[in-house]
Amino acid sequence: MGNPWFETVAEAQRRARRRLPAGVYGALVAGSERGTTAADNVAAFAELGFAPRTAGLAAERDLATTVMGQRLSMPVLISPTGVQAVHPDGELAVARAAASRGVAMGLSGFASKPVEEVAAANPMTLFQMYWVGDREEMRARMQRARRAGAVGVIATLDWSFSYGRDWGSPFIPERIDWEAVRRYAPQVALRPRWLWDFARAGHLPDLGVPNMVADPGEPAPSFFGAYGRWMRSAPPSWDDVAWLREQWDGPFMLKGVMRVDEARRALDAGVSALSVSNHGGNNLDGTPASVRALPAIAEAVGDRVEVLLDGGVRRGSDVTKALALGARAVMIGRAHLWGLAANGQAGVENVLDLLRDGLASALTGLGRSGVAELCREDLVVPPGFERRLGVPAAP
Image (cartoon, rainbow, N blue to C red; front, side, top):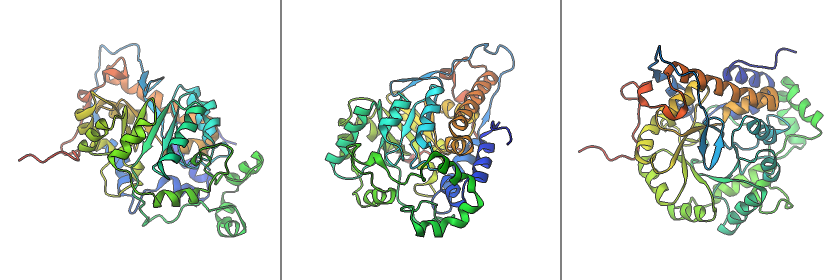
């Protein structure tokens, strides 16, 4: 067996592709419809350049920051992602890896592991809330998360249920039965190691979503059962967002903000943080890359709320660019899942180490002693890069 360590996130992605059945891998990489937004999330970072310094560089580099009341070793958080069936340990492996590197863990409401176990593995667990069910059910789910030890809530609203995806259907059967075995056997036969890892762990891939119920003793609904109920739930209003925020006495992030006017509405609703995000390109295709929308939002509200960036982060230099454009921290989704698929907990730690090393290297080249010093002067921003959404046009 080769060296389990990989030197780039791109290599983690290649290993994940070799290890996972085609449908499982496809569910990790593709965005909605054409995938235009998912591709732009990554491509936009490549359009940004650096303005390096040569002499007088800082000998020490401080990467630490505070987000949602949590002292992080670096400005990176794990973004909540649903049903992490790329590895038997799923979200528990990710939580342990994040804890070992001093990073907060975002736990999806559609996760395959219960919040009690994840919060025990990482004391900086942030619980994700989708607008599913009635208010009493949502309040009860948050109360469960609080009892489990979650230190914050992430309310995710950036999702529009796009069905037409050029890349086809993901490998997430409703349940593991003979029909699922028949349908997906050819894929699994080409990548047997994925199923073998689950066999060694003593269970099949987890298809239930245990955090969608108020009591850990209740039976977990299936992923598609909960997903269907989510689609049937009426979209929340801004009054609903304010109500949801009132139910949580602690740090509260609104994820999915791409417009300046909505960032201001989020402030009015009382959020303590917001994430500039297009759901990794899985929302409305044709939405600009989140990093293009970041500067205008950070300029408008960044002095009154913590602004984070989610989407397209693959390198420590990407983290650096986001911070220089006004983000307090970034959230990673696909990158850590590729690490998980490639090498379990150690693979996630590997990805986090790569981001840390890349960030530290960029700080050195820019002559900055810490992440708090990064600013727009450190970048080369090409004309027309930004997208100022929700800003009235000049007369």
